Length: 442
Ligand code: ADP
Image (cartoon, rainbow, N blue to C red; front, top):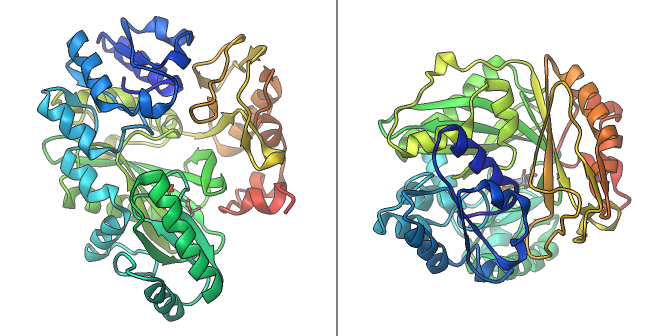
């Protein structure tokens, strides 16, 4: 596992069930993380900062060579969507558990993926045809399609490198800010522009593809509950998607996957506007944080499937065998202070009592006494429920949130306790501005 935390543990669990031995790499900051003991071998790859450990390709490859691994699972974040890393694995004869180098190149650049989708007849948000060459071009396109617009980094991810603009003046400054942010975060300042869809839902389709051209979709996830364009709560199925819309979204996702001869697991993301139109926004060429809700509803273990596909196995499920049963919702438990703009609050967890009981799954790498390192993201666990229908899932989530005890650091749990009692959430009236609108004082 070229990763850490809950996703490293998730991969270890899949491997143990498949009777595959695992090697965990860890930074000095993660030295005492309890999940490392579940790996068969452990290799320290350097100091805490990601750039000197989990992002350091030569160190990870050296660890892989020393321990003679056959394959590397990159998890999410870090090197998961780094085509160069996938290429290095290939040249070292290590199987990269994910899409091909060509897939990552074709879809990782958001402006190119957008162009490809448009060429395939998949609806995209109106906007620039390609990268913006200048501020003047940005203004020209924005005036053509009408404000508000959103400037987006082509290399973007995690909600970074995006700026919404309502007029020429905010567009000019937003253009520069987005470029600077993208250069700092992704070493690539290129940006493009889209119409800013007001209060859409974020709907994404999970796909699986094998090395023999078979592609299936596993339904959608509704990830509309976000803060700063980053997801907090996800569910499957979406309360806004019926069978007909699901089939159209699935077709669009599969068309795109086939066009690039996609392999392994991936997610095709769309926005759904208030009129029910969907628009492609991007593809994530990796396993996602929110994959468990799809696993619960389909009964398909996505991480195991990733490993089997990478080993050359054909898909084990046909499209007609994929059935969505019940409803699943996930809350990302982050060590953050929602009242201070979701500022991360690293520190030591003094008490940790995860919820349990019927319908509850908790994916976490932490325990009481665990110190959250300041170097990585603030996710300390995921609380997932699965019930017969959405109302039951909400009831179970409320109970599970009330049971969950985390002391020593602030978390997003108190905010979620309120959200799961909010009239519009219960009704399924979700959109990407929901949390800002109802829960944050402007
Ligand atoms: P990232 O790769 O950084 O996650 P995405 O392109 O996936 O960026 O977008 C993340 C979120 O940003 C979306 O879920 C949505 O909330 C918002 N967003 C992106 N594009 C638009 C758009 N054209 N109109 C409105 N909101 C958008």
